[in-house]
Each structure stands twice: as structure tokens, then as C-alpha cells.
Image (tube, rainbow, N blue to C red):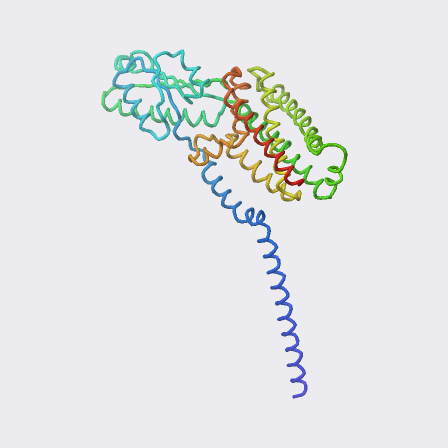
Length: 389
């Protein structure tokens, strides 16, 4: 009985100790929850990031091409051409935007962005089918995005082949419609023509915005920013002095990318090199101003990195058209993509570098980037002055 009572006392003490340890553990867990929920930014990152990612990757990352703008040249206007045109118009993949009367208008349609693909019927289309059993259709599309060009021409070819079978049953004779595919700006279907502009936008955005924000926040985090701000130099010049090295490094990166694109990847600069560099410098200013804005909102490098990953890298890769065409996304994502600077930069680079167009065709993109640079710089400077106060 004596040993059993001692054993019970030992067990009771162990249980009490375990209960105390569990209470202490729960206290620490509750403290950590308080610490997390006290920081609104951390809560938003933890709870909203999965929602944003699943929406972006679920709707934006789609290889399916829908609502492609197509223009049609139909000199015959006969039974066969009307059948094919009706089937294309009824398809969810295409949207007939114009019936052209002159094949010479094809290139202007691509330059203006009004059409993504043009279908041209041959003269006396149905008559040739009846008498010779052969007729030609030409499909012209923009080859600067090889994946999209392949998908679009494949969809159009499948519709044409289905119409061929329908015509074969009605005419009870052997017919053969031959689609001829022509790719503008990238006849070799090199993927580098597509990803080089996108990589330029991504690299410049990350180098300028992310590195600038982290550099300034690092000074604030270690406490040296206050020392710099009490120096005789005006605060604005101190901030600009932090941004200038990244502007220079970004220009070096731009030069390196262009040299590698031309001499290693074989991507030509078909348009003006001067305007391409000028456009890139404006985009660099946009990225630097965004990095400055982020540095006024956060106080730690970790927070700057997290915001940079959410605001810069993921949207730039998904919503800028770098990987997947923006036109295929739901309207809400297309609307959001208009606020992604890299989207406008990539579109303009493709026009100037790949398509060889003049700066007139990129006035819209250039104007949007200039507006973004001005707005972000003004907001950043105003926010920075408030933080100083």
C-alpha cells in the first residue's frame, strides 16, 4: 500500500506537470495568433494569397484560345465560302470583325491590332470545287506568338475540314480544300520571338522594383536611414541616389538582353533601336517608382520581398501576356491586366522589335507607361514625405 500510494503521487505530479506544460503551450500558441492577426499585411498574405493564386492560375493559365478576331476576304461570295464563313462565325473560337475587299489591307489589320488572323478565299471558289475538285484558302496569322498562332490556325483548319466533309456529302463528288498557312513576322516559328519581350519586361521589373524597394527598406530596418536623412542633403536626393544605380544596372541588363537576343537567339530588331531603348527607359522609370512606393509602405525586407513576389513577379508572368494571351482570360482579369505595366511594355516591344513598326503604332502603350511613371513617382514622393513627418 505504501509503494502504491507513492506511485500514485508520482503519477499525479506528472499529470499536473503535463497539464501545466500544455497550458503554457496554449498560451504561446494564443500569443502567436495575436501576433499574426495584429499585422494586417501578414493576415492578408496568408489568407488572400491562396485565393488570388487559384483564381489567376485557374482562369488565366489556359491553352485554349477563344474570341479570336478574324477578318475575311471573300471575292467569290458563293455557296461554299458562305458555308465556311458561317461556321467560323458560329464558332466560339472566332469573332468575325471585318469583311475586307482588298488583300492589301491584311498587313494594316495586323499592325493596328484589329485582327489576329485573316482568311482569304481564292477567286471562283465554289466553281473550282465543282469543276476541278480543288480550291485554296489562305490563313494569315501573327507569328510573334507561336503557340497562339498554332492554336488559331489549327482551329480554323478543323472548321474548314468539317465544311469540306459537308460539301462532299451534298455534291457527291471528290473535293479537296487546301488551307495555306502564312505566318507574319516569324515564319520560322521561333519561340524566342515570343518570350524575349516578356523576359525583358520581367527582368527589368524585378531588378528595378524589387531591388530598389529592398535597398531602401534595408536602410530603414538597420536604422541607417535616419542617419542619412539628417545629413545636409535633401531627403529626395538621398532616395534618388538609391535608385540611380539600379537604373544604370537595368540599362546594362537591357543592353545585354538585346545583344543576346540578336546574336545568340536570332531575334532581329526590325524597328527603331532608339525608340526601343527610349521605351525601355520609360518602363524602367515605372518600375523604379513602384519600388520607391513599396519602400514607403513597409519597414522590413521580408515584407518587401513578399509584396514584390505578389505584386511584381506573379502578375507580370500571368497577366502581362508573357506566357498566355490576355485575350483568352475572363473579362475581370483582362481589366486587371490593364494596370500591369509589363503588359503595355511587352506589347510595345513586340511592335517595335519584332513587327518592325514605327513609334506611331506604339503611342498608346508609350502614353500609358508615361502616365504610370508620373503617377507612381508623385504618389511615392508624397507618401515618403508623410513617412518622414
